[in-house]
Length: 302
Image (cartoon, rainbow, N blue to C red; front, side):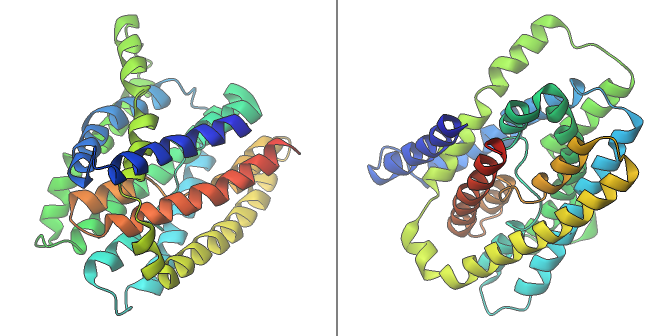
């Protein structure tokens, strides 16, 4: 567990170092972001969802994921929407409270702590979480960008957004019990294997400590809102899960833990794509990764 956490931070540090050495810059980060959004992340989504055996009781986890992501987002919206910050910074801060980083950050830990069953449970929770990120999150990114906002524009962008298309495709394949051919599965494994590395490198590239310190008041406010709300929602879902499935404590544990996972990487990707404030998003991601890592370390050593 500890070495995995150290590896994550080492990759972020590499991204930061190559930026400071001017080997890569934020333009390279934008290119990496597009590779993640259009290639590696859709592959990860298809692979995760199609490999999950969906049972009726697991749909409660999907609903829990939607509730968690929506409530945390609503709190972020209330806190920052009337702030005196620029639209770009305001939009990125709200986005950092839109959803949870499960597929990239938490899946390996879920498998390590609970095995394949735990990974399956977290994937179902993540389906609900992803729906909020891919719909409301993208709508917020458009709302605070320089692009003209309209319902028609949002809908057109959403139905052509690669991660969402991948998610819907994976659901169809899962429910129809279509098996992905071995060759394609191997290809997905190779391509998807690059996703975590590219994602963490991108975080490092956009990490700017001077900027974080300049907006530290709002970042601390956002972090406090995220974890206090996430913990409150997680505890509520923990007890609801106990009532729904009293003989399955793993569902309750995963509901609680998932609600306090880091800021989603897509908040950074949206910020880059829509010219918002990727430095603030990158700072929030890095800090929440540190805090959630401590929580996972505690859980793994109980």
